[in-house]
Image (cartoon, rainbow, N blue to C red; front, side, top):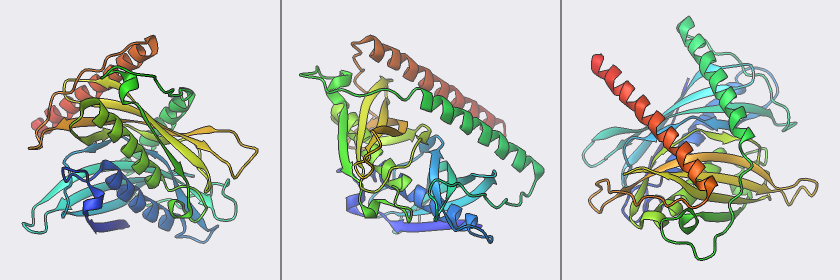
Length: 331
């Protein structure tokens, strides 16, 4: 079973340089994943349900998509546990004038099916058939790894971003940004909770503002580390999306983004942290060539600690990429 979404990229999907916003692509990826997961979870007799996004694994933006190109998003279910679905999504862009095609994104998403009758009830997922026994074993290993990482991320989620008065250029306070959004019906699923793709698009917008403020050039999304959806966001809530720079290398910037929800429709509930993630951006010249990034000036002990943690993630990703290139060269 596979799901495809095809759409031409319009001017309102892109930045001033004609590059499509990463958030637009993330939203399309999530829509394809939600459709195939919901369809699969309702494929057998049982309780009607809607698949809700729980996590997006690290996603690399291999190549920018431009205005006028056609984005082809294809999704496939690769693993199911009792209560979750793993979906692999590929994005290919096509220049319809020349016929040239290129792979722009590869993503892995995890969904849980929620009952239409009781949104707090997770229903059972119909199992899929595997071509090889190894595919199921590899999927189970990925499932256990993401489950552990989700727990670790939730435990370190107490940070709050405060405004800074008269910050110096290239400091954390200078570029940090927030966006406030009232959740309306068009943002939500059949269950009345925000689509994961809507949230990711808003997160990418805030991260992009932080990156642009820091280097004052054209910037594009290079990658997104795992996005963890800790709690559902209800229709009528006011969400605050906050971003701050945590690390810079010579040519990239890491930005931490939080989503906090104020559930005004539910008076008994206090503000809570709903989603968190790290975005990586690069700075580009008018010709689309990578530019050096101004180094982040850290001032407080917390900023220095976060910088070192970001450096660790950067070096880990770099080492993993080099290992993959070496492995590809051997084949």
